[in-house]
Length: 302
Image (cartoon, rainbow, N blue to C red; front, side, top):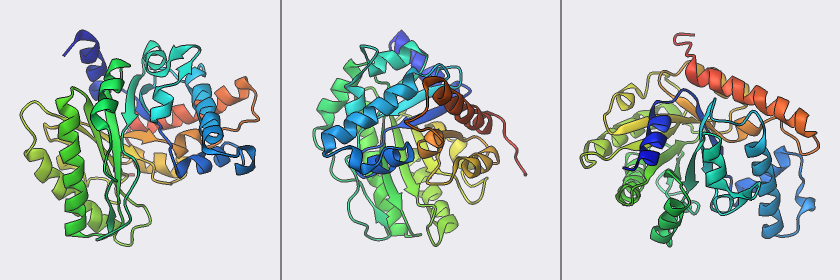
């Protein structure tokens, strides 16, 4: 591992802060833009839509409050990774502010089956990993979803995630594994218990020296993932907001030992395209402070 990657590794795995998820893509982009105050009528095709999304992300990244003081890393959509901020490639711009760049590599979900939605087959992954590494990206993220407590389905999505994670690790990148239990699952707690057990089995089978970051839904039982926190193959345990409003997500996160945030909608909640830059930064700083506090100051037992 090079000195730079060692520095990034230490920051991601041991730093006090949280991960900004700036990787909305496909179907989630119109919702993110609408939350930001940009209606669908403001763009007429995908190129224009993603252009507006990139402008929003760059505005966040350039804001005075968005620094490595509280933000450890940021997860990027592929088009964002290839873009620039102030004329600098986005991964290099982030690192200049002390923020470690990651890349979302999944290409969306297959239709639900056995209570889960696995990832679509990943095309051209090796080339994307090589490009990401050349641009200074430290790791990757990929997402599946779980709706019901199905042993067969959960084993399938976890197996798929770990198979691809091993491929990513062989290329020298740190994989974030994200099997998301949907917050409206009719048996969320049971699904989380099954997920924990499936993850432990796969973690035990990882080769010596290989670690993954886990990104999981805030659990119904705050102590549910204690065994994962203690596992030597887990570099960090991230929490996704899953659609909870920021206040609720932060309340749950503050009561969950060991997890730090990797929020998307909850991070950008309250931001609006019509804000002046100072107003925008005040709102973003408030969000960052709230999420940072929930990630670093735990209220176990509340």
